[in-house]
Amino acid sequence: MSILSADNLTKNFGGLMAVGNLSFDLEKGEILALIGPNGAGKTTVFNCLSGFLTPDEGDVIFEGKLLGGLQPFQICQLGMARTFQIVKPFPTISVLDNVMVGALSREKSTAEAKNKSLEIIDFTGLSRMAAIEAQGLPLPLRKRLELARALATQPKVLLLDEVMAGLNPTEVDELIALLKKINRQGISILLIEHVMRGVMALSQRVIVISYGVKIAEGTPEEVVENKEVIEAYLGKEFLSAQGQ
Amino acid sequence: MTRFYLFLAIIFTALLLLPLFLDNYILGIFVMIFYWAYVGQTWNVLTGYTGHISLGHALYIGIGAYTTTYLALTFGLTPWIGMFFGGLIAAVIALFLGFLGFRFGLRGVYFVIMTIAFAEITRLIVSHIEALGSFTGIFLDFNPSFWNFQFRGNQPYYYISLGFMVASLIVVRLIETSKVGRFMVAIREDEEAAQALGVNTFKYNMIAIAISAFMTSLAGAFYANYIFYLHPNTLFGMSTSIDLILRPIVGGLGTLFGPVIGSFILTPLSEISRAYFAKGGLEGLHLILYGVLAILVVLFMPKGIIVYVKKLLSPILKSKIT
Image (tube, rainbow over all chains, first blue to last red; front, side, top):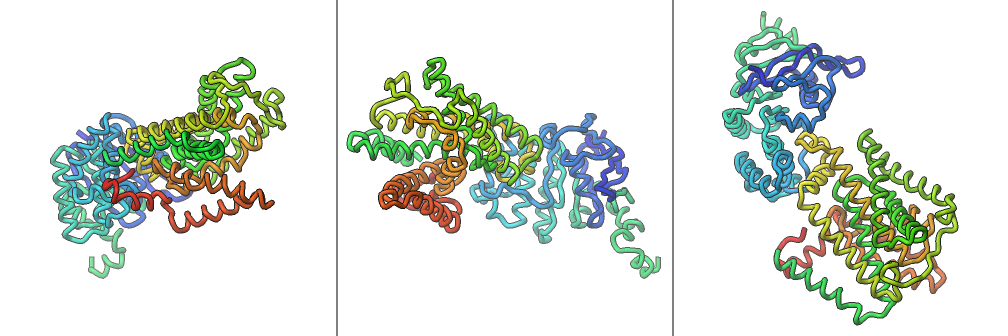
């Protein structure tokens, strides 16, 4: 049973089609990766799903409910949280205060939210940084903070926009382990990712889009063998040079 | 933290006892210190905490002053109650302004221009309403009594303005530590990220502007009954709007004690230099002094003087001041 579906999503920016007739389902408890070359429209898909953009056509269905016309904060309150590719920490307040904003959208009392936030900060490995202003964090930890804040809203679905970009292999592995743990708690994850190490290790299914259109779908192993996918990433010349 | 509260209690007690030792003129300066600290604080709620720059906060002072005075002159309503009517009117107008700004995405300079426009439009309207004294303003008759909010000498005003300032500190402290305050700060830091985390940014923007306008307009009631003269150009004017933002900026924007520290530095400077320069026939020179100081602070202490005050006090208090 799918928890989140995109049904024929289309989004144009002026004459440019960013996303065209894209449909997919995220199953409950699944980790689904959305990959594609730069400019393929991945983040636009995320913005449509999370309410930051209104799709020109098509619907987003979350737990059987149409999300059309809802604002981002309402979608978050329903149980779908997102991170931003270009991280958006609250720079001049502490890591704890950052996470508490997310927690407070669920909890009534600040004391309750604080406890919850400390738990999540511990879970995401930010404990040593809890009192530091977010602007003092290096990029890998800012990405963690994005994740921690999103988790604090107690989501059922997490939309992760390139949380592994810019991390070194060790950090990627740590994050993979962390995301697996999150997934095991029953949170479904949709990720946009360029780091194939992460995609291969995490996702059960992969959707590939190019110029806003779905060109392949399948298990990670199937997808990386797919000719159209290789072409989209590396071009026709690469394929002919390979003699295929 | 307890040491910090003890420290505050000592200062507060000292301020309570101060009128026993000071003459009327010096008390007057203190009244202005507390007054500007108060309005700086109320402006701070919208701009310092929520991040929306208002350059038209004189609007709310003017509304408070005129509403209170009009109700007192026409219906004999005591300013103690009248000022809350002023507050409500100010809040309603602020909500309208906020609706236009926050609903239709007017941000940055466009929001600033709108706040100025609202203040200027109101100034012009009031300047043409006969019942509000039009452009000559309203002179208040002096009938000293507690009920009339009018007193002989500065001592009662001293305690009232001190009360205003302390009350604003308590209210803003309560806001700051509450869910509302945390959401306001999140909006200031990054409105999109706040939305993504489930914060109804429109609602909390509206709450912030309404609280700020309501509280600011109470100061107008005080001002009217302290100066006894209302004039649209001073009450709604740009210079008042600028005057009231300087103290929180110099003291420390978005901090609880920033406006107070800023006022304790700028207000005496303004009052004394005004008197001093005027004696030498150089009226207005104090404004230049002001401007230079504001530029220096912005250049060298962008987080305000509070940062240095904290450092100075930290050995005594051994705890953080928020």
